[in-house]
Amino acid sequence: MFDLTGFQRDLLYVISGLERPSGQEVKERFERDFGGEIKHGRLYPNLDHLVDNGYVEKGRLDRRTNYYQLTHLGRQKLDERRDWENQIQTGQATG
Image 1 (cartoon, one colour):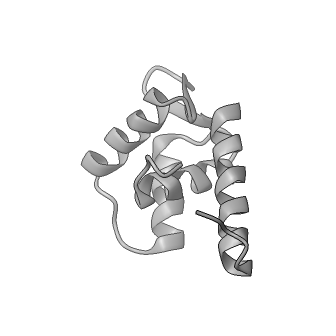
Image 2: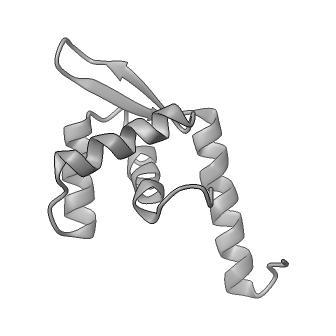
């Protein structure tokens, strides 16, 4: 999970909380939760990076709209990240 930027990790969290969202739905939720505007030129290349690395599946809703869904690997990586964060908070992390 350390191979991702903070923005990409946040996108994974947003996608994990939605049911097969479109890119526009991801954008709207991210902007609502984190504040500020996300440009398409930032959003879609980062979504593509997550797809290319196997964290997210991209499919077609219709001719113009794609959906995004966490893969098993994506869910596993989020779980590993949460475990690491919990270890840091409790002072149990090693390394």
